[in-house]
Length: 65
Image (cartoon, rainbow, N blue to C red):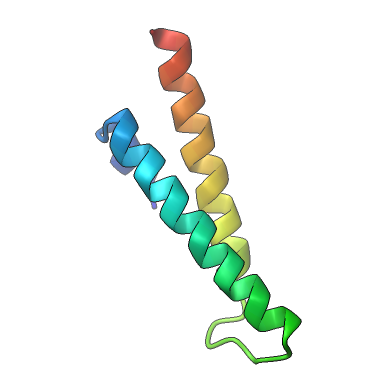
């Protein structure tokens, strides 16, 4: 996910994507906790970074309003 993609999205789209990312992170954390091996071990870290990007873009939008 690139910052250019995020800048072109509306607040509602960003919030919806944030919810989906958090759901996916919870799912992956549950798999790790139960001992299941992940298909992509780096995916949780990638999702956390994307969540941070989404939150940053939402915060920027709030400041400019």
